[in-house]
Length: 145
Image (tube, rainbow, N blue to C red; front, side, top):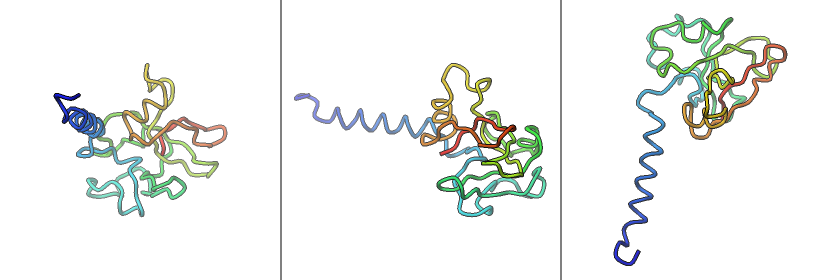
């Protein structure tokens, strides 16, 4: 690298820019976004009462996780503008709580050839992985930090 001392820095900068470009923060998927309170969630939805259920910021997930209550999978993208990316969401109980919530799905039928963890890192957030919701008989595989 004697003739190109700037090359390592250029390669690092290009890799860093590519990593940021792969996770588009201009059009984030609202479910799964970090939060401190429900007010941080679904900012583009003018009337959150139109969502299928109450908006929540799950504090059982590190950094918070925006979601809302639901009864069936179709409740998770029922309001226009609620789902930005079009990636599948599922409605499932979280850690054996009685209520169901919307989560980004990483079920085998949704991930394709990438595999569950790589799918979550690619399409949800680089720090996310795929895990069980812990919902007993209604357990689903979802992307969470």
